[in-house]
Image (cartoon, rainbow, N blue to C red):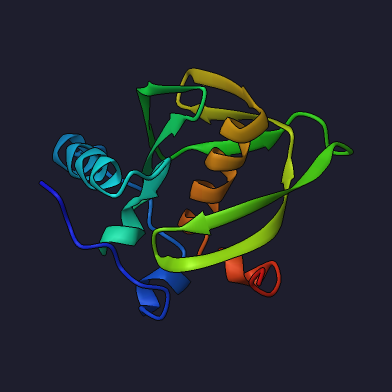
Length: 144
């Protein structure tokens, strides 16, 4: 089901998301439907009004592959390698900000480990930020 995307001034986006209890099949399906409807690369549960540590994402190089993450942990792989990425956000329509991102990361979810680099790494970091109540506008002013 396509859900409304919460806009940046809603307090749920400024609250750290609670751990998920594992009952996520319907939530993940709704996140995927909503992300695809808006042609996004990722969407976190708080963005549809649900304070759970769940998000979905797709690799810009393989847009048909969609990944779901429940209670993930993010680990930068090379702390000294950061680049500025111009990012937008479905919760802040029409705004783009330069955001520093690690070029390589690993996401761990229970026993699953996914290594990501480049733009996919940026997408995963962006969605992790949503789970931790951080928005792109926290990184700096919008680009004109």
